[in-house]
Length: 211
Image 1 (tube, rainbow, N blue to C red):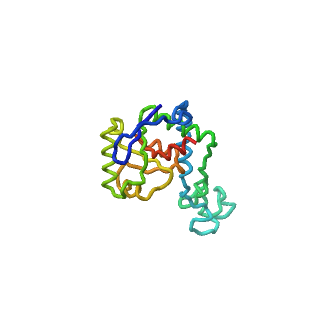
Image 2: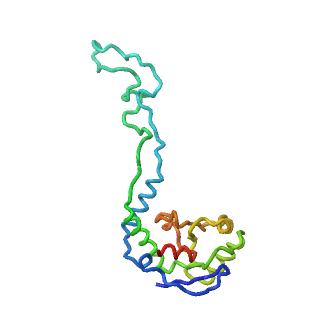
Image 3: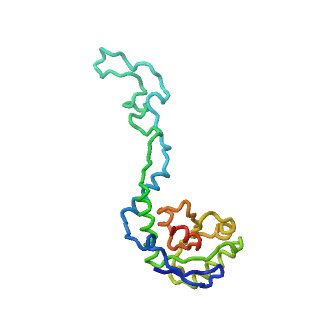
């Protein structure tokens, strides 16, 4: 499976074969879904906390005598069965929502979603971003040129630009553009990829990924 290589002037300079071990694998929709669920669960924090009977304000005096009233025996008004009392089984702020996915499953899920992009012809390569001027207008100019050159990209609203690491001039060029996301190879994950319609790789990123 091949894709086109462009320079920062949006000029086609060649084509490259995508590594089959990553971009031509068996797609597992189940693992993609699971990887997204695990990622979202691990971003979740426990903030809700209900007051127990020891936390609510109120007198600790016994409601009425233990015997002789004909009614059920009770302690004080902070008990959960009374209005204004503490919560019996409310959240305590210590809930753990963390989930795990094995390294092998993560790799399969990542390869699956990258294969989907490749099959839909939603991947192109930029030979190098180093000479791109750190200006928003240059980022717009590059994307406009690429949209004119690639029909699939022209119909894609969300674009993910993947590099080996955060590049300052790239961040300045694309940071203010809506629906254009800068992704680093070091933190690449299925959830971020699932939120993109099209992927633009730098060539050195593709070389490292294939290794």
